[in-house]
Amino acid sequence: MSTQVGLVSLAGLAGLALAVSACSGSDGSPPRSEPTPVLTTSAAPKPTPPPPPPEHACYRLEYDGALAPTNSSRAVPCTGRHTAVTFYVGRFDRNLPVGGTRVHRIVSTVCPRRFASFVGGTLEYRRLSLLRTVWFTPTTDQAALGAHWYTCVAIAVQSEQRLAPLTVPVTGALNHPERRDHYALCGTAEPGTPAFRERMCSLRHSWKALRTVPFAPGRYPGEGRVRAAGQRPCQEAGRQVATDPLNYRWSYQWPTREQWNAGKTWGVCWAPV
Image (cartoon, rainbow, N blue to C red; front, side):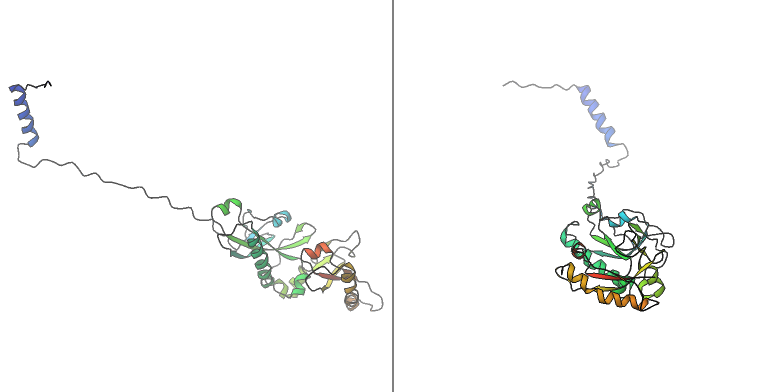
């Protein structure tokens, strides 16, 4: 095996000695050391917090918007024109899907119960009123970010497919006769006639709902039974508000099967005013 030998001249050795002398310094100070590198770690990104629930606010909703499952409308001052007001914000378990039946059951139970306390009055007054409650759940994007809240909102149906401006305070409205009359159920003509339209009593009207005829919940009793049940009480209700007890008119609206299945398990007595 061959070996390669390197030759170093005296001049090279002398240059090396000078280089060492120059690095050592002539003042006797110790050689400088290289700085110790500092290791840094990047912090993990913080998870995006779920969208907060809406505040108790007012909105300028249209009729179709009030029937939608979600609400993306911008809140407006409650001191100005508005057609909807949030009266309760609740939460459900974050593991439940927003569009699932369990969430729907929770919201459709809690909001009507909270609504009863919010507007006040008796069950009879609420049924004879055009004040209603609707509810909204998070949008798909909000749900994907972890939102698990819902809002209960109060509205008033002014006339067919039209919401009323809430110019009269809704909180406890049915506890006060004047506010109750403002949001009460009236009609443009005799119920059952072509010209009949439901509307708030604060608008021009010619007939008014006087009382209800309640039925026990369960299966629909049949048109014959619900129709017969209201004849006597509605006739009596009409007689009580008539100027002439021997000559007066009255009307009765009984619930259809479709209305019954939707939750309306009562009839309504009417009289001209």
